[in-house]
Amino acid sequence: MLANPGDELEVVGGALSGGIIVRAQVETNSLELPERLTKTSIVRVTECVGDRILYELVEGQGPKCGWLSLHFKGKQLLVHAPKNEGVNVLITDLEPEEEFHLQTVPHEMSTSSEGLLKNGL
Image (cartoon, rainbow, N blue to C red; front, top):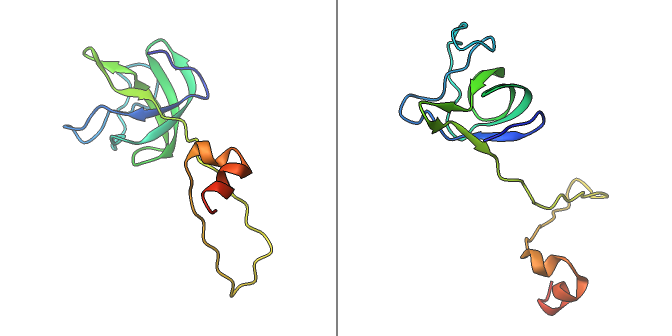
């Protein structure tokens, strides 16, 4: 797997060991940070050097930043995170006592007002 600065990656390794090792510097023999990066955490790549990345934590548990290996003993530790293709909604002009309800619809329905009208939305 190749990683580039700006990529978001998900931790898939380290489940049996409490997470994957994070180091203070790019070298694999540099200081190991006391906390591990847990499985399912999402990181953003800030720098790449060979099979090593410098990351910043986007979500999950572990050090806020540090150096990781993409692979260990032939096993992949990180994969490209699925892209969030959700819908962002901006709600304005609500009085404090007003409520709102948001209903999600399948993507094919949300691309046209005709699809919404057909389905009573």
